[in-house]
Amino acid sequence: MSTDGRSVTLIEAKSGATIASDYTDGVDRLARVLRARAHDRPIATRVIHGGMTRQTRGPTQLVPWHEIDQLIWIDTDAPA
Image 1 (cartoon, rainbow, N blue to C red):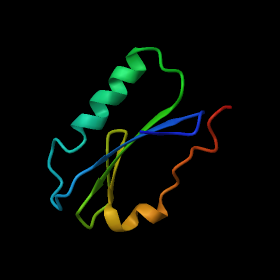
Image 2: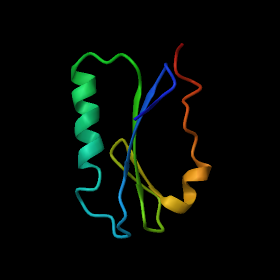
Image 3: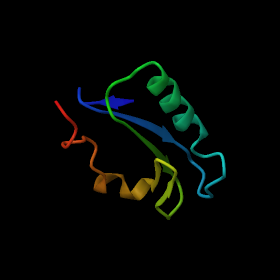
Image 4: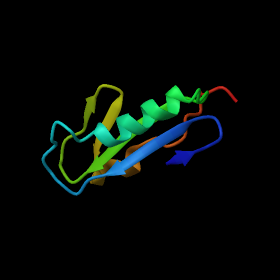
């Protein structure tokens, strides 16, 4: 979990190259728990994987490991 004080980014790493239908289950479940506990900061979810394709499933970004340097890790638009 990464946090800048204004937002939270939940990150899960998967070594597999093939994106399975349950790839986002872990981070999505944790995000739901945090939101249910009246967490007041924006929560982003990402899965870093061993494949070659960037995808979005619901609110979660699936990012190939070789593209992690292209991500913005801090939400500069989140309220202070």
